[in-house]
Image (cartoon, rainbow, N blue to C red; front, side, top):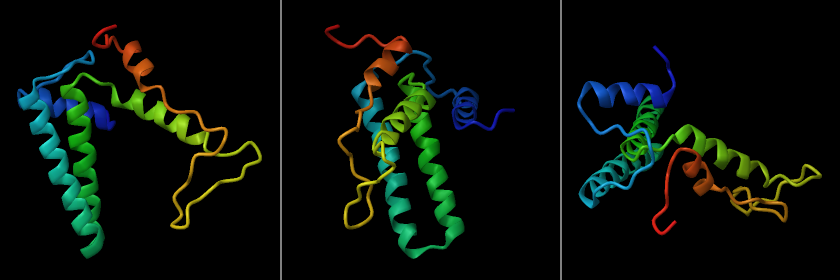
Length: 134
């Protein structure tokens, strides 16, 4: 069996009769709210354990966030791997052509003059999404 998060979460959703769409789709407000609540719950657990530890629990909670995020993408029919690739492409444009990195005082990498915003809409359109009003 594949170890990709998308494949693992799809197997879980199919085994347990949970929503699993293959084309980007808006879902009911109730389902969307439920998925948002699940993500918020997992993110709160990460925030707590990242301060209190231990490291093995942090790893567990981080994996739970990824699992629920991939499940939420699956419920909406989003190929999250493709979206992540586009976000990565965009993030890499933060690196200046001279190899220099602009950082905020706390170390966060900033967008430079060569930054290109991600085109997530294009990624979703390639997956079959038709935007409302399009």
